[in-house]
Length: 304
Image 1 (cartoon, rainbow, N blue to C red):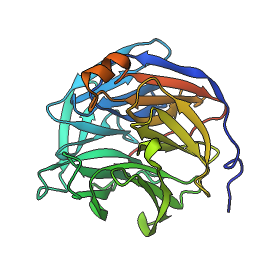
Image 2: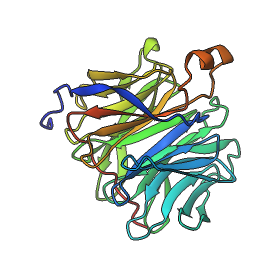
Image 3: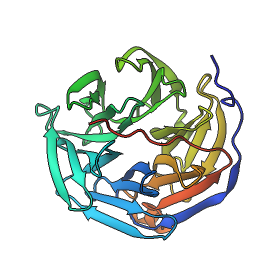
């Protein structure tokens, strides 16, 4: 059944703003913390976790000893669940304490984790990828609240996403190198996926699908690596409904936040750009935001 409003184009209110010219090598991992009213995001290759408070403009950063790619809040703890190159860990921003939990790929040393987030039941879904973005050694994992890990799909060079339909019964997940977004049937009760199928194939001029999020109307918002934009799509037909243009080409991730959940936060990257391009695009690696007329959804917390 089509959700109300999924075929309606959103209204983009004004141009994107640069919030933090961080010069991130590979910005990613956007997470709006409702409890802190702040945005967490990461620089994967810079091994840094960042936090931005839009009310006070305060910025904070933590440097880890390996790549950090995704972040989720814990349901009953101030700690964060994070994905590192070596697997899952808890990180406490107050103390800087890191507790390593599980490495699902000791047999794949050329891999690292990439994008990820929690489903409505507090299970974390994340993908791994080949560090060189070539070998199809990446996989899709579910990490449950009792700290059990399950591999659900395999054979990706670079994974991105995931996000869910508004009713929680479809999981969307990206095969970035192949420019494909897949849909899976998703069972919210068991956390199992099935019936993998192609949902959207990017055209060459649209770059590569990167991070995604779902708004309160059920529409998907997708960051485009190599195409300077975030697009909004009908979840039933994959038709493009709106496009937000950014002043740099490698757009990596997006998440709704702000007091009214109508601010779309967007990350970008300097990685892969030559000196001439970096000179022409001085805001590469920055954190951006743009206002949307309708809200997003709050991020689910990790149940563990």
